[in-house]
Image (cartoon, rainbow, N blue to C red):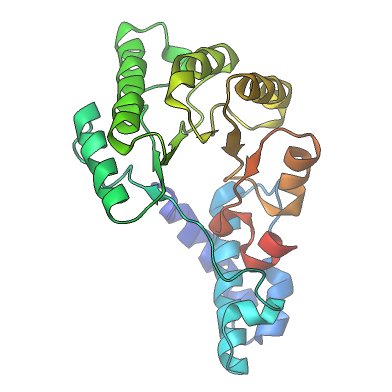
Length: 249
């Protein structure tokens, strides 16, 4: 899915179909490369990513092995995970978030992630209602921290809703919540990279780290993020990044 852009995905799939029908998986794979600056944007690259995953699955089935075996031996036997409780939390009050977080901890999770800033966009922060939405988001964070206690890690996803000044203010306001990471605080477009680097340093000074880059595409889309030290945690999303090959390349 692409949050309302599915008709564009289907149109691009129709365009690709004649090129793919009749191809073997090996012949199809070179046609499924993603390109960070494609005019089709995420609509095209998400379709290519999905097809790459489907073709890789076919290759694994044909070989009689799980898909991961096509890329070598597993690197680890265990992986720590967190509970993203945002969409399941229908009661959007601070108390509702707290209760949802308590249930996640009771289920055995040692880390919880929320997206607390509904109705916030940095360009509208002068609007009293939007400013109130920020305050409500902060209250949600502290309610969850109180509910889960100091030993469970708390992560927040900000969905690129802030600019540099408001991001730094938020970092200061939330420092007592001892966040494990703050995700997608500001836009990750190239023109924002200098600000992102400054915000990362600011976050470190206040005891937290920055995560993001989930909408980057291909190795090229991640190189500058990693090489320029813009984030502490880089989070490629396999459904945008190009499927298995780009994730592992």
